[in-house]
Image (tube, rainbow, N blue to C red; front, side, top):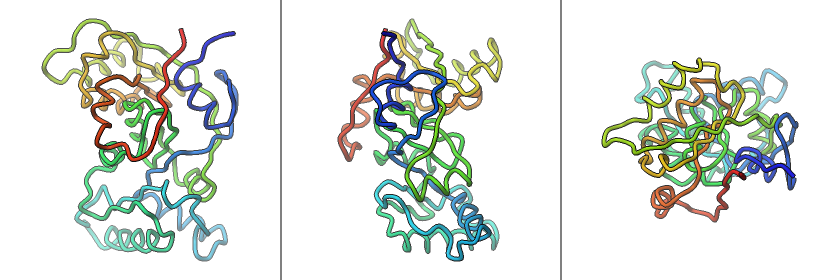
Length: 256
């Protein structure tokens, strides 16, 4: 029996299966959704499709993390009105996790507030949601159409990606190195090297990387086409999550 990668293990769990393999199509339950200004477009799309009041419901008010972010303070009337609508939607859906204009960068909020945890499947309305993979979860960006379904039903289909395991050796220097690693990979193998694949970083070199380097590397995975960029959970991850994790989680590691 062949082993499974971290991406395969997370997607299998989310689909209620014991095993899966690259290429298989799965319907997966989501552990969380990061939403921000794109939710306004989702709302308007739903209205244009015939739903007068927009999306009728949210699948779980504890698992949608809505933020008024990106263009704050408002740069024009359209942006200001968008913020007003987001506040109205947060109130209508009774979201437990709503962050107004002073919240900070959405992706940093997702990791700092413990909204993405090891072993989970999380999506976000921005391509750099892939950053959460530094915390040993499978995270990826989605668009306005997928988010409408995800927001309402709490699930999406995925094709299980092939995985590229990258083994890091040596010791990281005392200055930021994460971006350099990703630029090296892009330069050597091309910006499409990981198109719809999962990058999985392992090896002794990982243990010398700080969390900010890992976040940078996971974040930049999308710039070389990756669906996920996942790190194993270790003592450094645990230290970061110690005061942030707000619910139980189950870590994953790749099989040999």
